[in-house]
Length: 254
Image 1 (cartoon, rainbow, N blue to C red):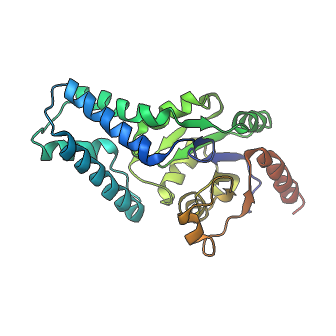
Image 2 (cartoon, rainbow, N blue to C red; image 1 turned 90 degrees about the vertical axis):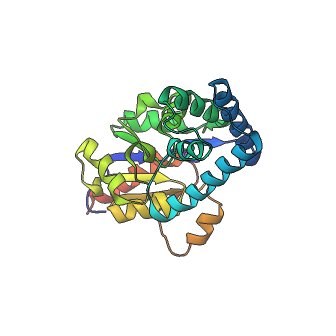
Image 3 (cartoon, rainbow, N blue to C red; image 1 turned 180 degrees about the vertical axis):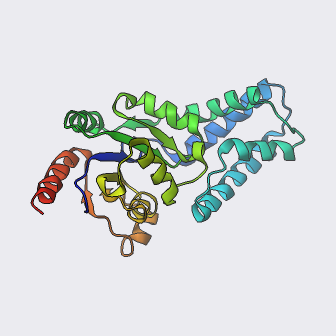
């Protein structure tokens, strides 16, 4: 650690908030809600064919973005699928409420971690500027989740991959965050649950990488456990202020 840590960037999902539903069931309900909204807007679509094509296209897009670290957004996928069904040049006034209805279903299942606000409040009181970077396919969804969890008053910025077109671990998205403050990479910690995105990205960008392990027992993390090493690990957010204090004390003695 070249400099004492002066600011902290957080991931969103499974870091500050967690999902309490069953993804397959929630996604199926969300897709049906999307279709109902498109029908109400006057778009004729065969239900079974559209639902299958939309979900298949999304899954293919999810695989592609993990390989390329580029975010094309759910809106992009939906436009392409609608064009396949003969609906080209669909107006944003139709797409935006349809996507809102899609994400409203999953938003009901994202819950704030019990120690999120106490931790953010303590860090803010200790003088740490705080920010957020989220890998997500819809920026409006991220912004809604941030407000729903009452996180925004503590954050200087909220950057989503959907808004900027690139995903963690691409170092460029971390550079965008650093530019918000003017700090050097060595002065900023990244806290997240995903080794392949949060930790690898932070380390490649020169940030201090803190792995939050509470929800981190996933296939992706298990695949990377022996190859991607964080600078520090914590199980809960409540451990973070103490860790930063300890790291600061060590830095001041060097």
